[in-house]
Length: 171
Image (cartoon, rainbow, N blue to C red; front, side, top):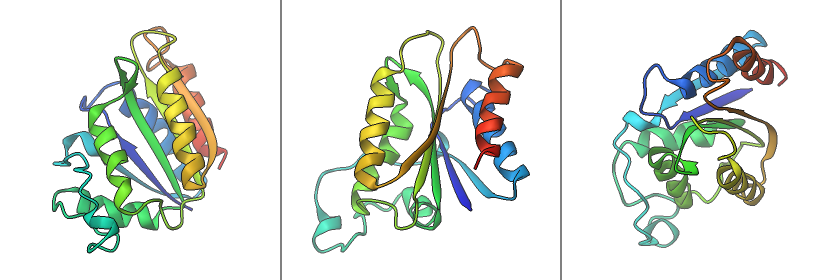
């Protein structure tokens, strides 16, 4: 299975990438092809709601930025993993820009599965992001394979990284 991890954290050695790398390690150990993209370090603008993609663009976004590198990865993936820190109760703006730009393609062509990896400092701040994720994947016709959350008491602990790794191994 081809798995695409979209990491929305701008912190190169932070808690979110630790979860993403553990998941990747677990999935690769079972023979899956995993691509991890650090979208926070890409030049990706938000959707302009111009509807070019649904009219003259025929599924192509009018904006020519780094999202053009990510669209083929999205369309080729069998599974998409959304990894993000929680910033004030929602996923990072960098990952949100990518999610908003899914509008051009409406839904991935092949992806049937998804997962969510969230880190934060505070506990009990995941409700909004999880609700958005569940509504989004339902709309796109994907099945959730698991959600891992970590806060300041569990970030980067062996137990939490093992949970993310086990999720990757379970596929």
